[in-house]
Length: 68
Image: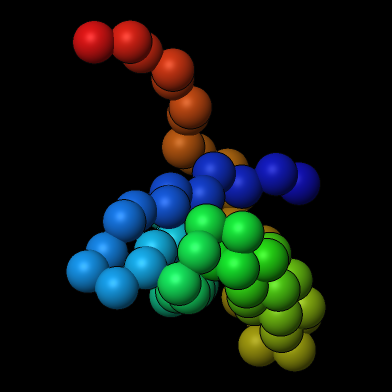
């Protein structure tokens, strides 16, 4: 399953989160590091779900590329 990940510039690097997977976040100095850490965080977060008996998050977010 694919999840939307939002990456934002912060004061000293970048941070990322997924609106569909609460509590799953990552931060690093570069976008590339942030992407890699977020991929690991999502994998770790989703691997833990069967043990906690929580449902696997369903994708609700929609990506729209709008030029302004």
